[in-house]
Amino acid sequence: MMLSKLSSAQASLLFSALLLVHASSAAQIADGRSMVKKIESKISNINTEQLKAIAQQDKGTVLLDIRSADEIDAQGGTMDLPRVHNVERGWLEYQIGDRVPNKDTPIVVFCGSNMRSPLTAHLLTQMGYTNVKNYQDGYVFWRDAGLPVKGDNAPDSFLYRTPQEVIPGVWSAIGATAPPDYFNSGHNNNLSFIVTKKGVVVVNASDNYLLAQSLHNEIKKVTDKEVKFVILENGQTHAMLGSSYWQAQGAKIVAHVDAAQEIEKYGQTQLAGARSRLRDKASGTELSKPDITFDKEYVIELGGERIEVLNLGPAHSPGDVAVWLPKRKLVISGDVAFHQRLLPVMEHTDTDGWIATWGNFLALGAEMVIPGHGMPTNYAEVTKYTHDYLVFLRKNIGEIIDAEGDLQDAYKIDQSKFSHLDTFFELARQNAGRVYREMEFEF
Image (cartoon, rainbow, N blue to C red; front, side):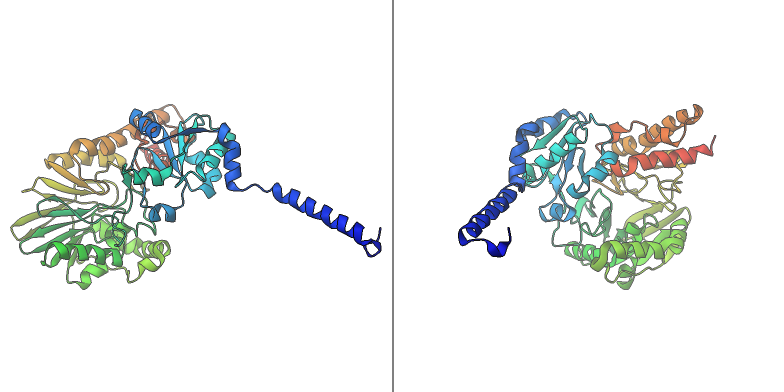
């Protein structure tokens, strides 16, 4: 039938039929709320009290925060519980296998307000995970109930946290125990300072110019004394890229000779990486060389304080130093000691040498340790997660090599007893692989 020959009644009927078809098609397009309602009976939901009970039992449950990094930043962080890991919803299908390789691992999924987490919990069960729960109250409820959260405690500053006084006259701005990114402004290590009667000594120049400036602004709130020296814990980005700011203020940059060589060889590459990562926050950041270098020890006598900058032996990276205050029985360990995040084994890390260095570190007799990352602590804690972790890896990999195993066997080492540490999923397999390659040449 030609459309031009339709009667008005026929045309009206055809138009009505087309409207019905369109309405039927539209009705088939489900929105998020209807999809959540449809799968409610297929997922296991838990409330806040149940989540607290699970966290207290500490049986290896992984908590997946599926929000984006900017959401986490805007909403004030994430839950301060063991094994909370951020896997953004948009990348979940691609990243979850590396993060949670065992399909029977208990998983609790959460988002801000229970809009995406139910769908994610259902998806994980479809992917083959057998023990998945959805936290239906959501992070915002958890936060507003005053339950423990961790995140940027200084939202109006480049600093992740403003400095705290650890002991009288010694302060530390504790960084994020996470990789450096735009949202933490590169403040993922501890930036410490010592106030004396004649001036201030800073430990770590920081990751960039504006972060160094932010730390200086906080120092000025504590004292009117000038910053005289800035000690670099090693030659890594987060230790040294803020150096030019401090030099402009008249401070002298102190570094081990090996750290200075690392800056000379890799500094431009590190600077380019920081500019890419930080974008506008990298403004003013330029590469500069240390003013003072040393081999074994450099001593600063300032305002009645003796500050010993010590290279105790091989550790995490070339030029690692510890800053020892003998009168205070306090050591600022830098990357010689870790505890709240999994330590990274770098391509040039001498793990056997690091274990040997540990005896020199303990021989200082410190009563308090300010580590390179994480809160101030003690020898027992950093020994468990530095020395003992290295011994654990080398023992297991030694057994694999003795049995003529290969790199894939190293990747399968069960490191789950360390899985509550931040950066575990980013570093555990990498660490095993690098220690395997290191030890291959020792046998």
